[in-house]
Image: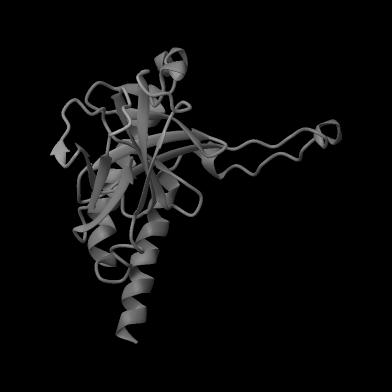
Length: 218
């Protein structure tokens, strides 16, 4: 009984904070005009997350499950996942909305987090890693290795690369994005020129439980 009352109190506090959300978030969706019935639906996912871990704050944007941008809060700028997205990353028209999202998320952690401690799972399953090349494989020609991490929650992880069991330097930042159901995925990239004898490994450590997943490319 006490457990149910504690959960109810935490949810009540959460509801009391919802009035702070922008009105547009709660506005009912307008009916789709008949002339649009034949159009294909697409999904743009804008996700802000904060946590008592590293990274403590994050933002990702995806279009039809493909991540476009993350956000560098220290520079107040979008970071494109791929060079092709760089031109769209320059838009800062929603800077005030992102600032609000950041402050609201951090307030939720401070106000609601302690009430839910021990009542929701710390982690959901184990992350899964796989490695593949970005372009078709041609030995002796520059390419990029992609380490894709799925089934990630919460998004606290470190990604390291090794070549023949030797750590590799100069790895690009890891990009984290949310998927439907608030499970996260991550991408890490390594530029290389493949040779027939190469063996690369991507080592993913889930910081919350120290679980490690390793994926190989050879």
